[in-house]
Image: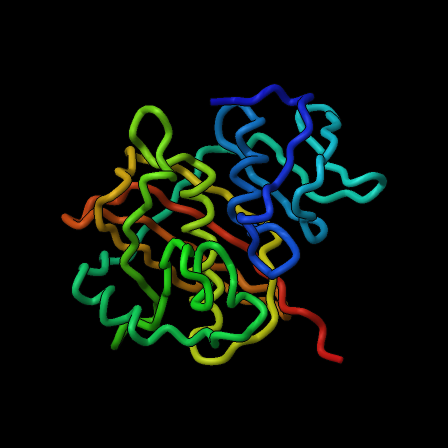
Length: 237
């Protein structure tokens, strides 16, 4: 459902990624909902929590502002075409999640998607799949994540597709990187309360830039959603 583009948007504090700013995928999904049809969202600065963001239109692009600070831009895009590698089974995803590498006290330890120090996280703990250049986790979307239709809300799907891309490009060491661009395509409804697999894999690298892709897969192997992400590593000091 497309929300009025002129209405300010507020990211509630519970939907953080880093401790003091919004989860990139969740926020990108909310921003994309202001665009009719497929959209690409570019994140320009940390997303403040519990703060109304003004919305400004420049042609077909929507700009989300915290005062004078540009937080994000959402623009119409072509439908996302993505080839998914052979899907990861539920059993292999469970084994991969047991290899989840994030510490309990790191920058993302209280992320609402993948925070191991948070009891109410969504439990997307993507770890390396043995013998393959990708990461995966099981994911059972919570009931509160469902829209009235019963399907998981789109911004929650964007969030679930975001965090695994970080671990796809940094499977063995935790480097400081941030999501700067994301596109998502939902191929079928995702049911809350049912176990799924989220898998992600690297696509390219250029200096500090890292490309990755991700998919949500049903327990029977149906591809339900796909996403592309661009991450940028923080400069070394």
